[in-house]
Amino acid sequence: MVSGYSRWIMARMLPSKAAADLIAGHWRLLTGLGAMPKALVWDNEAAVGSWRGGSPQLTEDFAAFAGLLGIRIIQCRPGDPEAKGLVERANGYLETSFLPGRVFASPTDFNIQLADWLAKANRRIHRTLQARPADRIETDKARMLTLPPVDPPGWWRSSLRLPRDHYVRIDTCDYSIHPLAIGRRIEVKADLDQVLAFCEGTEVARHARCWARHQSITDPTHAAAAKAGREQARKRPVAADQLEVEQRPLDTYDRIFGVIDGGLSAGEGVA
Image (cartoon, rainbow, N blue to C red; front, side, top):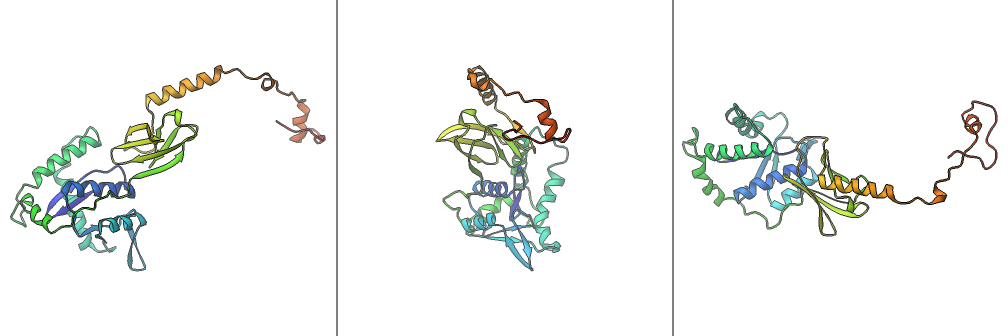
């Protein structure tokens, strides 16, 4: 995600293009700036909106986000290279000036290096402006809007009864929850950095957000508790009436599947 004001560039790499992550990324950049513009310009990202019948239509999530901020979200018209160039120019700048020759150990390392580089890039003399973007940002902020007093409700959130396998899915990844919460209702919240789960106000999971897709993330404490629970269950005595299994003549199954002639008599069945 890249934003620019008077050639001042802010950017952050996000885990996905889902609406929850795009809104969280917007909020992270805007709160870092301490103000917000009167409009945001977007290319035709599916999570943001689309064009229908010649008119732009925001998704429900981004319509709510725009309403909370009290600003406009402008969607570029399909096939309009001039408008798209406004959005893509900053992306191209990062691709040609920031990425070449760099090595990243993790998404966190990427964002740290990006923030350090942007601090220097925004202090360079811009050829068109003949000024440093860093020297102009305070003037721009004076004409911007103030941030709303509440966070947008755009993070990954869910409320569910924890299933027997004690995992919950965020985006495409599964995260373990402490098995003591199995069968009880939990609240799950995830942002750009971590996944948290609570059961009746008690924290039952905390994971770093996984950026890979279709992964299972297991806390060793949760795995050990689940193993101990299974071992304890195996040691429980079994009632005598549950140990006796009725044995049926084999020809009962042969008649069912038509191997031999004849049908089941009254009261016969297959267990």
